[in-house]
Image 1 (cartoon, rainbow, N blue to C red):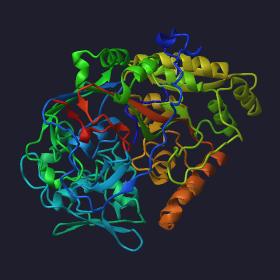
Image 2: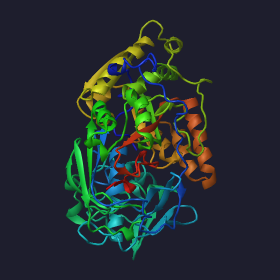
Image 3: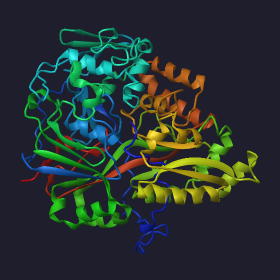
Image 4: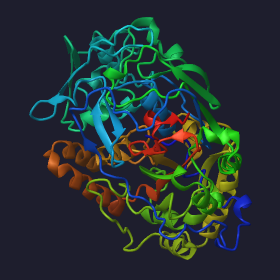
Length: 590
């Protein structure tokens, strides 16, 4: 799952406002973490197929009130249609509060993510080789209008994910179309003129059972079942993609009252939601108000001042310059939440064909300055990445492509460029940035300086839109001019199968490196056919092989998040599967 903003190209400079800090910081301007503070490795996911509703009550929880969530630098979801949603910001909100799926993640007592049933009564049943999965749909879940959620509607919602023309940035483009039987021959209900998905036989309904056939083994289907696209959609005109993108029907404890894209989303109680039907969610607050693309400095001031506006508020990030103060003032209300996210730079593999140039780019990134530019705290919310698979992911290997950790080293970069025949003339780089984001503009200026100090000549193209809308559109005039892009990726479950194929499979939508290698594609397919217990190690081996042999993508950092909770927000905790506030369990202290 991509991040809510392009954390690689945006996050590549020293923000000048942070340059003058106390003498307890560093000469780059950021405050060193307090003694004992360190990057947190994500906890392993557990499963509980027998979990039943209602969800256990949160100690001390009281009903009522409004929780306001302030989201600096996050533009919010691009769509509210569950089939099309694929951003860590929007999906974390919608999956927790609005739209139910086959399965779901909850926060365990020890803080670990736990995979439990949701609309299904268990975590699914598979045949011997994992090429068929059956989910029994519970009969007591409802839409916000009081009508029952039927197995046919669940099957239709899942079928919609095959329609890559209608939902080109939806997660189905990578998973449903890759695994579901016959997906190559079925373009999806809208593209096929098949409004209720009658012509696709890869998904079948028998009484309360929904069965999905696969073209190849898919042992991770229970985890894929927790993704927003694996939920129901009303049949017929009610889920027409144009209107449904603005106002989907809720199946969770909250429904959409108002959505102003990139500005605000207001959720209110769904009176038809039955807590007895839901093993994971609560409905404590009356309303949630999400405010997107907030100014980090203003949010920090609100949350650290203790004023009335902060007391029932949550902030999804904290500026680096206020980190030391926050650790002293907030106590347990400052939560460091681990994630599975990795940030990368992606040289265009069709244009930058010499691996030595790609390696030179890796040495041209000033990591700490990059992180501070967008308010990250080095060593706490960001650490250097050596592999694509992040710490804590099963099968991960420590990888040293050059036999050592890659750090900012302009001399090393210039030496590699000289080896590649570019000793006398700077190597040309063309990249783009969103000039409407002040941090992106400042970051690009500093990144340009760093790259030019390392032997590159940079052309930076300003655009006035989400950078992902440029990178993902191969017909975009600006994108065609680029030879360096990026992507920040948060896998939907902790497995190499949710990370490597979306970034490196030939033709994958988020393969912004345009990397294509038939042997790598075959290796990915082969791993799916291995015994389940061997797959994690195989993904780790493939990660190392790809980076060592091809180096088509540059891992730059692993991510944690700092969450700030107001003094009257009860149960201040994060949720590990999405790296977000634990929206399901929050309440207002009355």
